[in-house]
Image (cartoon, rainbow, N blue to C red; front, top):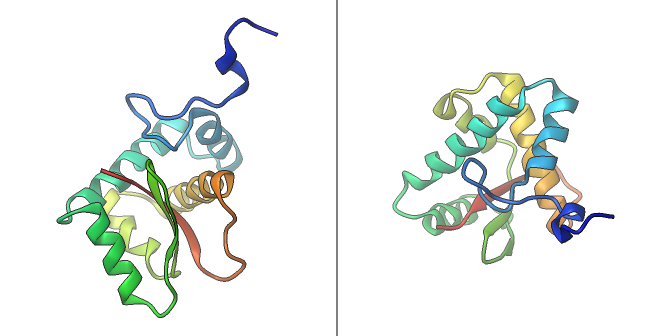
Length: 134
């Protein structure tokens, strides 16, 4: 055991990784998918930045909730909105954030792991998405 009480907890946030994303989960996904951690970190930032191009992040979440018959919002927490989006939503980001198919799959996996570390994901065809609050 070390004197640092943070050793048992994953580091969240940081200068290149917004909370609730954490370095340990990012590295685990990178290792599992073969997408390097630096690329995955860049994609997290690019995805969140693309959402901020809208009038507001909350407004984008509201639009996604209205656009589909199933409500995408699973939880609203101080750090993020936790969503389950329809399968057609994630592919819209591929060209916007400059991701290849494999890179987007890794980013989706990262979002899924982060979401499932906070709440239960629905058992249907929707896909987890974590949207960092402004």
